[in-house]
Image (cartoon, rainbow, N blue to C red):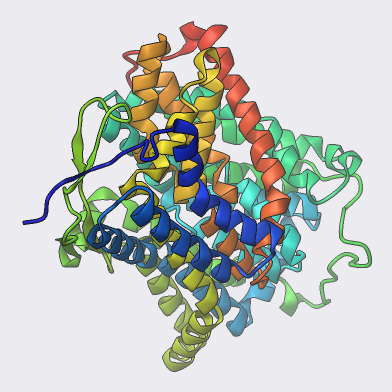
Length: 553
């Protein structure tokens, strides 16, 4: 019978050396991406090999457990991340193949032909709606594909979509990161939801819309549309604060995204427009052909938007708990042999030792990717494509993404190895010895968790308990530090390897992941510092604003 294996967070008997050893897979990945500028799939394979070697040789993890962790990561990576990317690109390709994407572009141009405002509509507001509904890679995949089709430059599109996707991550997947925090800490959901709603709006209301548009134009041109930036930020932040503090944690992003998208469409079309329309040099304004027959009726606009509306509807439907439960009936879930409940995580990362569960979760129907795939399958015939042609589009999308999918799966293998052998906790504990500055570095731990795992929920599962234990030892609020883990993690999403691969895949820039990593790292760290400072302010200046025993209406 297999014997339990206790994680050792200091396998070399020296904290510094053990931490450096634990960082080898991550450093390997970013070295080959950012310095050697290799294709992402090659860098991911090298990082995967490094993770296996460190797990076996340094952390002394049994080989059968390493193999189990890899297998578990591959299953999760395909059904929960890679499949979503394939489905999202499939929907976009159906829209392009049918010719309806041209109508969609014109409909957005009717709201505003200004590129600065189009970014707020698509990358920020529509992306937030998709993140709230399902998360994963769908927001960047769908919004990135839409913007490419509208003529935005590929690299700039990738940067803006990654930055925009940071805003709604903490409440993504209908509040899944917060539910994860509750699960690992045992603290109230309402307190965590409200605390995050008091940290994140301070960055989304004023900073992030300007930050995104500033990647497109110079500061002067960004400030020229300040009414639009203010309307965007204040609307999203206001709904985010209200819903997270007074209603629930599940629909925060969905409601904030819908309200922001609706208000911006009305505001830009009926109330205000910039004095000078900004387009790319030499681009000019889109010219509409004359003739009444060429007018965009509501029916034509609805038809053109139908693939993406179907995606949003299916992803929201798939995220409703009763629907998810019903779809999950056909899922195949089995313990991972040689791994399930055999890896024991020990203090100080957790309050008391507990065994890690490990399940093969083949949720082929309940994953949001399947909902998005059905949306594409329905949209094709609706837009005039035969079912055979629709499937040809699907297989073409799959083939085009093959190397990106390999990179995603290799990186999930790295993430699961680091989790089950304890490398993640070894790195996180190194930042827990920062004393009075722990509120700042606590947010950094969350950032590290998302950079490693690719998800805010994953970071909360890894480090939520560590945050609470350390906070209690230092006399800080465990609610604040649990929320800080999630808020800091939000800013790590853009540098997560999976995010980089997805952004490059949908914008046709396979092989440019290293360049993209270097471009977004400064934004990720800058926004992380802002979140860290806000957490510090709550810890030492405004501790009375930290919720305790909070209740929704």
